[in-house]
Length: 171
Image (cartoon, rainbow, N blue to C red; front, side, top):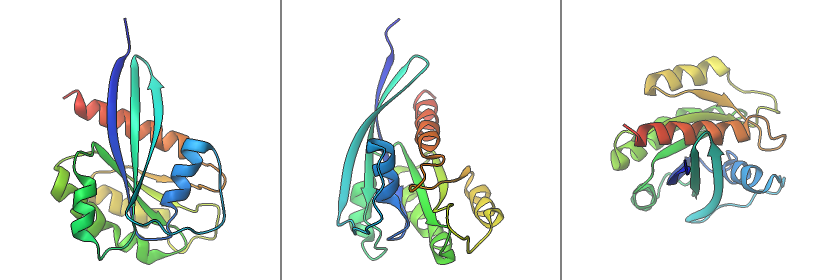
């Protein structure tokens, strides 16, 4: 039996400098760069994820982290099958702002799977994983600690969101 083929758009949401671009770079190229490069607009990367009888072409949209660009964000969200909502474990305000990112995303796409990522888990944490889990529970989303620098949980995160998007699409 040939594999079921999907083309799935996943958006990375969150404030600037939380590590969205670094997470994509780690997942797609298995690389990390300490230099901060601000994303302007959006950058789209592609990677194929395969499991069981599924082949998913992930179109990964790394969206600019400026909250003032809500109209632009809405255009980028259209057609998305899911999202990774990313905060920075060293900056509590990035967790607090995730609700506005998620609300903006869901207002455009409707119901869609979301995973909350607490990135930079390799550094000293400024808030507890319990705080992040409380937010995740409030929106019905799992929470995963990641580190783009070390690669911790990056592959697993993209595999999990892909499975969630395929399951949602199969409903």
